[in-house]
Length: 174
Image 1 (cartoon, rainbow, N blue to C red):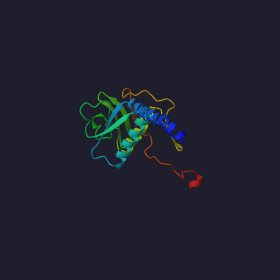
Image 2 (tube, rainbow, N blue to C red):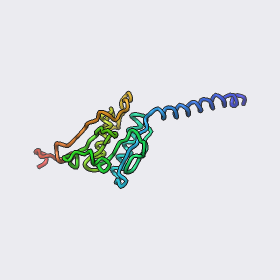
Image 3 (cartoon, one colour):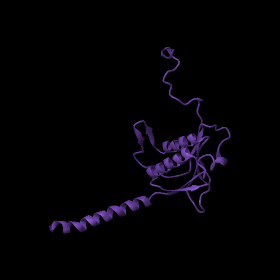
Image 4 (tube, rainbow, N blue to C red):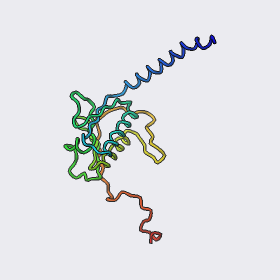
């Protein structure tokens, strides 16, 4: 019975230390504001959640979401989706094209359609070391340095159809 009171103090100190360490670790990452369209549909909302998760995984970021415009004084602004990024989208992007582009006001992650915006989020993750496999997503072994500068990625598909064909045009498909 005398052992339990003696363990209370060391266990309490250990718990306090672990709690303080987790708070300090969370404060180390950058504060990032993700701006999305106020009328974003479910796919763009999902893209925003995926982006928030990526930013937390890759950079230990504290992510806040804004709709329409970033709050006054916001730094590290990422505009997500076609509506908040319309001034930065190339005219010939098409519905399946997507961009990850640095701008003077932050970063644009957008596509010609909601699904292309989601592809752009994954492109941003890939550019920062994430690898996507059928068995799961894998972050880089070492966290990359956070920056919104230096991105100039524009992707447009070469094929007009994105699908896996079970039966192709070979002899077995006759």
